Image (tube, rainbow, N blue to C red):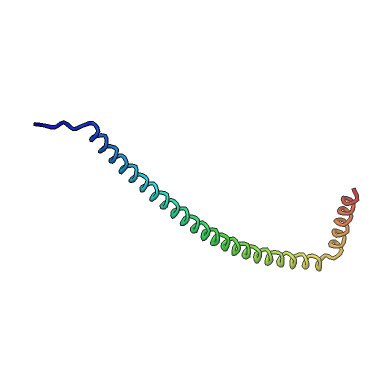
Length: 108
């Protein structure tokens, strides 16, 4: 004689199977959260080290630029000194004219 499965047995089995699936899903979700936390943490460390190296590179570039400006200004100053030595009256007239122009602009 064949016994038919009772609906209550099938329901209990499905309920246990559903609970197992939900538990497995919760475990997978917790694992995913931990993996995302680790990923964000490692990204934060990489970003901070990248920022530090970028800051160092910017500092070096600023130092190089300052050196170039310094050498350029020294060369420009030498050029101006040479022009003043060769034409002192023109340099005096030019400086007096610039002073008068700046003075009139500041009075307004």
